[in-house]
Image 1 (cartoon, rainbow, N blue to C red):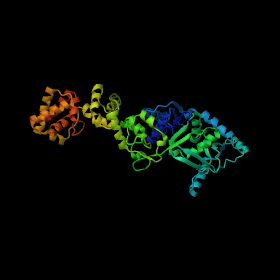
Image 2: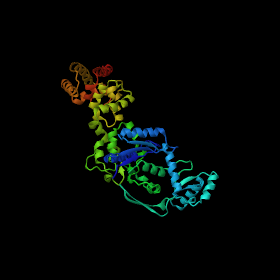
Image 3: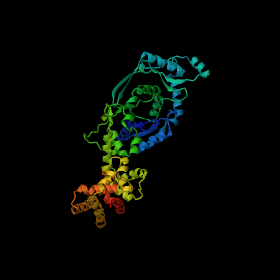
Image 4: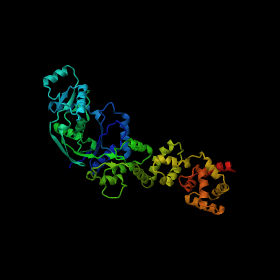
Length: 473
């Protein structure tokens, strides 16, 4: 096998879908595993649906996932090439002008629907003589260009995932390669691009299997070498239907905005349809995945997306794998959007160091860490009723006195101080921690109150407790 060259060729007509992201990852891993090249090609020939914002988002999301490409192309910048090869097919007799109007084509489709059979073009323009073609052109009649598909031929290929596949040409008939407005179609340009870019392995979703025989015919007609094909099974939701918005977020952008780690999403998507050699292991670095990935280990059956599993994996990356400085860098924008003051980076870093095991995503982090940044908060009436108790008041008053003496700076020191108060007042631990939590956060649960007290500046602690005591005493 010569140098491996793979590509990912998205259309900028929407956000990067998880299924497409997995395709990009598998193509990338395969190329890197074999020391080859990975190419990014934006397929933007659909002028009406392609948008610059989607292209920019695709590029950003792929880079965010940690996918680097060796070459970059846009199909819209290669139209002259497509025109040149369309003319070659016309001259060699592998293609012909089709003057059928949209209305005539729709009539054929309607007849097929009535008969209950799949539509295929009748071939009415296939047998026009050169004189008839010239006459219609002189009349200014618009025309598309169709590929002349050989009749009753079985196109066979060995798919690297699906195995032996055979499709008869009579199932699809002559197909358009250039529209009447001059724009080339997918099944034509993808062949020209893949051939000229030296793509050796085409890795894509199984929805492209019906396109493959058409493309093989174009490869042959143009004298190009046919690459190897690998069609990946679809990703399903937990209800076993095709993954869609009803299953929750399905775009990479949505998971970025929720505060997932790119390494976790990359890792998780790899496990959708690929079985690593080490059974039972699920956490892999990108370098390990490059070393291990082989197409022979890709499953033929659909993979099921489980958001809770992804969420668990993300929590592992946050707790154990992502370096603290990296976590800080990624957390700052989320905290800023929540309106928190993050000017003291060392304080924020210390907070993250002690609380990173208490949230699964960065969007969840902003709410979880609110008590470390927000001094003004409401206390619900039922919680005021709990605080309006002689023992609760004694706890808060004694705590204020003790922190002035002890100045605890670690969770352990806070726990030690709490035990002293417990002994002095002869109360059980909940009678210590609950009043403190309500006074300092306005809530009854959250991150460890010992951690909050150890990290929160002393003046903030005093301010919050005094505010409560002023209303109680």
